[in-house]
Length: 281
Ligand SMILES: Nc1ncnc2c1ncn2[C@@H]1O[C@H](COP(=O)(O)OP(=O)(O)OP(=O)(O)O)[C@@H](O)[C@H]1O
View 1: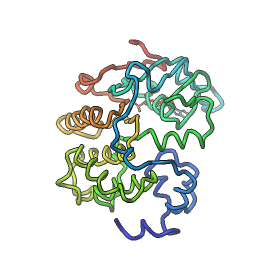
View 2: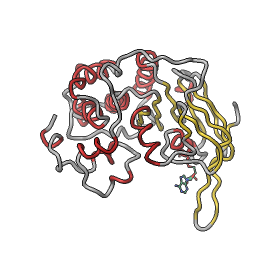
View 3: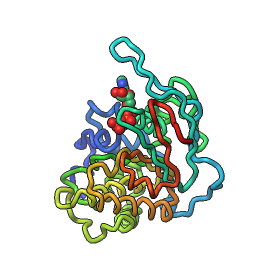
């Protein structure tokens, strides 16, 4: 780990770059220690590896009658027009639909980054539709991981350091970093490339580092927006194989968007969105 990551006061908007929710940190110099103090949550020893206890018949997340509109040029643009869905534990769920159909808007709401104008979103008992930003941030930082089309890795850090940084940001005790980082890189098949930096890795390998990073704090839900869009079909298939493995190994639920019909074959369920509604539920 590089020295500047450790020293209070020197770290700038790493959180903003790593985490889509950190709007408040965008323009402010904030140290990692300060972020940890404000947004700390407990990561008790052992919890990163302990088996999860849940009822597989009960949804992890429910979306009921969700509507979302935006005001564009003085006119109302209705993007989501009544969405109902449930995500059950350890499922691989895909959202498909044309560009502009509302997939990312829905994913943002499932992840607590945005709120509906109407309807309900309940994640692990937390009513996201009623919660304030701070409450949703705390839940999100503990229970949700994000993966993006463009990998979103820190370019100067190695694969190992990228994963370790995620643990630090999640306030995981330092004593757990080594074991958890090694475990996550092993899960994505990159133990042998742990010291490589992003530019020394293929696109598929970079995306697998991003997956290791997103699961480092052991979230219950992983959200991925077009995670294979920038990969060729072979690398895309590798990423999907990793998703399948980590669902079992980490007992995580994955919800992702995609346009790729070959990838949809490995989903437990595909929701097809047309013009802000599902057509095949
Ligand atoms: N914050 C916003 N303000 C105004 N319009 C928005 C906003 N967010 C999304 N939209 C609009 O909502 C519509 C749906 O966008 P969204 O990104 O959810 O679609 P998508 O299905 O994910 O598309 P793609 O596959 O291209 O990513 C688009 O017309 C978009 O311009």
